[in-house]
Each structure stands twice: as C-alpha cells, then as structure tokens.
Image 1 (cartoon, rainbow, N blue to C red):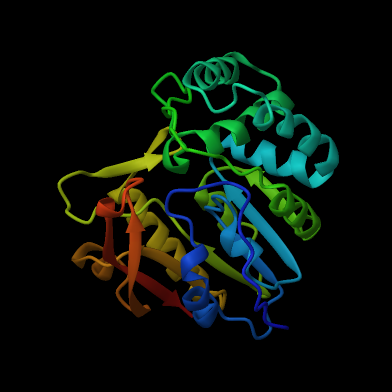
Image 2 (image 1 turned 30 degrees about the vertical axis):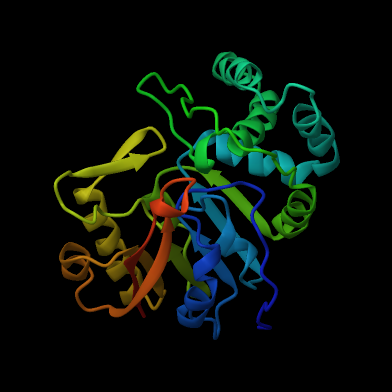
Length: 276
C-alpha cells in the first residue's frame, strides 16, 4: 500500500484533532495485509484523510457529524453552494448573526439545513468546539475571529476520498463488529483526564467515563486475539498505562491549544497504545 506523504486538512476545525500527529500514527498503524481502516471515533476525519487504505468504516456518536459527512459525500457541489452563502453574508462574522444561526440550527429538523449550519457554527464558533447541553442544543459561543476561511478545497477533497468510506452513527462498540481479518482499527476516544479528579469527559452530549475507557481497552484485546490490530490514542497517565497493559506503548509530547492566545498553549504527553 502506497504511503500518503501529503498532509490533508479536515474541513472542520476540531478540538483534539490528529492532524499534527499523523506521522506518529502512520508509523504505528499496521498496514501489511490490511485493506480497511475502522475508526470508532472519526471526529473531523484527519486520520481518514491522511491514511491510504482501500476501504474505510467510520463511526461517530454525533448524528450531525455523520449526516454532514454523508451529504458532502453524496453531493458536494450543492452543499458548497448552500454553505458558502452563510460565509459570504455581510453579517456572517457578527455575534447577532451567529447566535441567530445557532438558534436556527437548534430548532431545525432538516438534515441538510443542519449540516450547512454545522459548518458555519464550527468555523465561526469558539475554537472549533462541538458541544451540546443537556437538552441536546448546540451551545458553543461566538468565536470572535478577525476573518474566517471557507474550506472549499478541503470539502472537495473529503468528498472525493469519501467514495471509499462508509459513515455510521453509533456507539464505539458497534464499530468493532465491522472488523475482519483485513482490518485495522484506530481509536481516538475522548481522552481520560490528565488529573483524575473527574470520572468523565464529554462525548457528543453523552458521558464517556472511565468504565468506557476500560471497555474500549477490553475490545482492543478481543480484537488483538482475532489478529485484528488496534491503535488507541489517549493521554499518557498512570490510569491509561494500567488499562493498556500488554500493549506496545509510544509516548509523545504534543502542543495542545486550549485557547486562542499563545499563553493558553502547552505541551502534554500523549500515548499511542498498539495492540497487535
């Protein structure tokens, strides 16, 4: 399988995206005899976009994200025309317009309208966050950017590559059911806390707790026993090293962006656990 040397950006901004880690991820993803990549937590799709497999099975628990991906896959031209109109609106980069579109998104039941507004809210909202409240309403505040880029080239590239992919909305455990002997599984779950004072992190409006972290590690071992390799990204903590016991582990330092200012950037240790 030919290695992909060109870095491709996702069309969505995404907290915790893996674009900066692709060299490390590609270096540990088993490829010999593997033609299908399965991702139980696809997020914005950076790993999908920067790997070279014949087939992709991509899951996420967020229905807005999966509807968006399927719409872009099926008719990118229509999507771009509709989405660009929001970016080109004379009031697009104002609080009033942003909060009106956020309200429209939360009231809408139309998949296409929600997919178009999702991109607008993603690009104009704060730091590329995707966050919902307990009523399942998108509640990310306005981002206050000087200018906002419309990712047309990234949308077109995604649509082209998506012809090799299937997108499903579902729990991470469902993705493992699609695995076969020619598969490799890459998992980018909501990370375990660096300081274990809480038991959960946000998971598209649900709670991804420490029991889910343990369940994911168990599924990785089950797959490993079936000769289906699994790679998991997470924070490098005593807890993650314990639950990934038996896996080969690679620790890396990553620049983390937690605010719009340089003072909010720090380097943290992340872990790649390789079950193969």
